[in-house]
Structures are given as structure tokens and as C-alpha cells.
Image 1: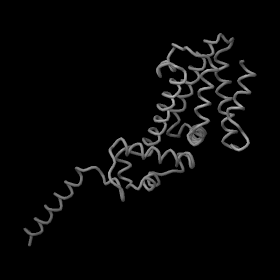
Image 2: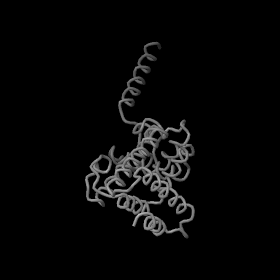
Image 3: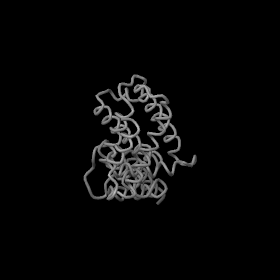
Image 4: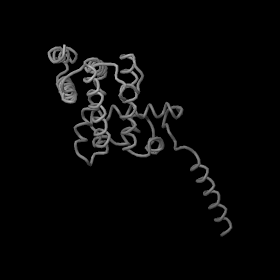
Length: 222
């Protein structure tokens, strides 16, 4: 009898070892996607949930359910909820930078470095035109921006660094225009963009984002 139990135990351990060597079961009902496709699917689902509920109001379980996956499959790709949040933000930044640089006729790295070839009105118009086409993404960023005012929020450092970079970029653009107080112009431009977008998100039927933005920009600059 002891030998029989020993054989059963060994067989069970072999099965566990073989299972542990495999990626967690990803799909409950659909064919397996490639790693890159699966990551994009998960990020899409997380983006939608965060835009509705904020970081504190969504869970890995909800993301898994929306993708028809198991929770371990989501964790396999992103390690934890914070890792998933950062992936959502970083993907949006990459996509936006590619679009901004294309619209401005510059390389993506030129948007952030000192080699500025555009004015503050140019870059702000591009930013607002891009955002007007993606209200759900703007809502996601607006919700997280408010939540991350607390230094305990996992996106706190991300938003602190991001604002510093944006202000620096807008300041250089204002300097390119020869404006008298370039950093002040940068802060005013960012504050106005955030404010107009908030009004638009709150009342999209009555607020035309680009019309309101152009009214300000025309009065402020030219």
C-alpha cells in the first residue's frame, strides 16, 4: 500500500510540474491569442473600465471577465493591477506622441527635447484635435489625474513627471514664438486645455471642444 501511494504521489507531482511550466490558461471560451495581441486586448478592457470607474473602482477580476480570461492570465501579462495601470498610460502616450509628431511634421523625440520647431498654438491645437476624437481616453486621463492628486495613488509619480514634461515642452514652444513670459503661457495653456476638456466631458451635447478652444486661443495668441 505505501508503494501504491508513493506512485500516486509521484504521478500527481509530475502533473503539477508539467502544468506549472505552461502559461496560465488564458481563454475560457476563445482560441489563444499571441502574447502581443493578448496584451492589447487586456489594455483595451482596462482602459474602458478605468475610464468609467477610476483606478480604485476597477479590478483584475473585471478585466479578466471582460476579456473572457482567468485572473491568473491577466496577472501573467502584467504582474499586478498597478502594472496594468501603467501599461494603459504608457500605451496612450506612445500613440499620442506618434500622432502629434506626424501632425507637426517632426520626429517624436523632437516634441520633448530642446529642438523645438513649433509654436505653442501649433502644439496645443494638435493636442486638442487629437483629444476631440477620443473622449473615452480623455475621460480616463481626467479621472486618473484627479485621483492621483493623492501621493498614495500608484499613478502619482507618473502624473507629476508628465506635467513637468508637458510644461517644459509648452514653455519651449512659447519661447519659439518669442512670447514674453513663456512658462506662464505654458501653465495658462495647460490649465485652459484641462478646463475646456472637463466642460466638454461634463456636457458633450452642448460644448463643442474645438470651437471653445479656438475661441480662447484666438483671443490669447492670434
